[in-house]
Amino acid sequence: MGSRRSLEGKIVLVTGATGALGRIVVRRLLDSGAVVAAAYRDEAKFQELQDFVGGVKDALIGFKTDVTSEAEVRQMVEGILGRYGRIDALLNLVGAYRGGADIAATSEDDWDFLLRTNLKSAFLCCRAVLPAMTKAGAGRIVCVAARPAVENKGRAKSGAYAVSKAGVVVLTETIAEETRKSGITANCIVPGTIDTPKNRTAIAGADPSKWADPEAIAEILLFLVSDAASVTSGAVIPVYGKS
Image (cartoon, one colour):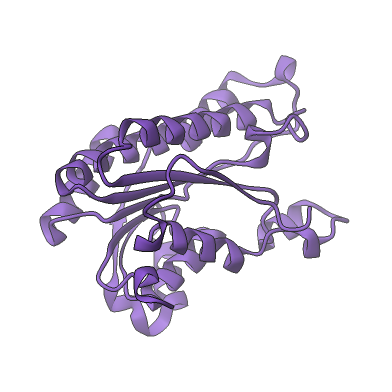
């Protein structure tokens, strides 16, 4: 890895850190020399993450945080800034899926849950880190949208999910425009189906070899938070695998 790809000493906040993609990203960040502040909800899952990353866990610090709560997000960010003095990058990996009903049959609870979990969390975390990044004149923000956010295919019976993730795209593009002259970049990836144990169980009869490999997605995320990606902002990057 060239020096501009090095993440040595970078302070990276990762939400959704204990998820199937999150834990791989966290391990890759730690292996690249970054210090990772991991937002998590479940103590047992954070313990699993620590076990998963193994010998590099000294550079991993956990923050038990509900990222849909303004107060808890603010407290987490203040905690990181108090400890390290800066946040070099934010990776918004937290997200959830509920589907199976068309718009006419979508419950208010599912709608609110997906908008809150996928979009509000990204908004709150981005908003919380931006003042410190603006002051530093540098920063990386990366969000995760989804294929139905940018394509009609896949939206049927996943409308609330698609809308929440389309919001993530527009949020990211807006931040990129607002920070264009600041040294901050904001980009988002748009995965198709990711090859995770949960998806293999949930989507019976599918061909996982066509899905996006989490390790390959992690490689793109690491590039986007590196100095090498300084000229890329406002990008909406498809990561569909062979699907």
